[in-house]
Amino acid sequence: QVQLVESGGGLVQAGGSLRLSCAASGRSFSTYAMGWFRQPPGKERELVATINWSGSSTYYGDSVKGRFTISRDNAKNTGDLQMNSLKPEDTAVYYCARSRASYGSTVRQGNAYWGQGTQVTVSS
Image (cartoon, rainbow, N blue to C red; front, top):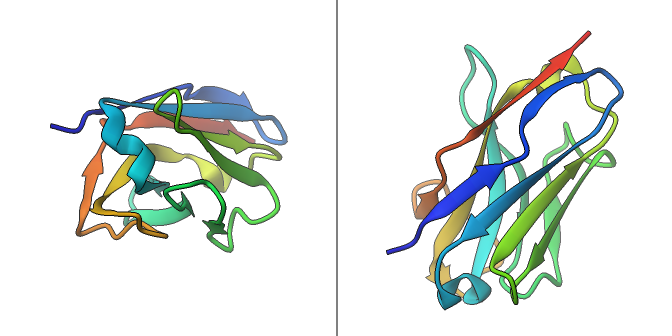
């Protein structure tokens, strides 16, 4: 059974930075794409960033491109999301996700394991 645990959320002023971490159980993490999604209050869940199984390729949603950086450390079964130049519209619950498909390049919301989420609040 796959277990994902997010951490690092909190309250930050606009323009500040936060680093989110995702700790995954088991050795299987290294062969699966992972990503971050977020759900702002009153809005639907949206893609933030994904990284392929090896960490060699990444993808970012337009709203975070140039500000956020996704990374992973397969030896430690962890994935991080560095968030810089935060804006109030970045306020959301952030979820770590791992694809159910081996050696994938991305994460599909309908085919993934999910963490419990961590709250990020950006004040203006």
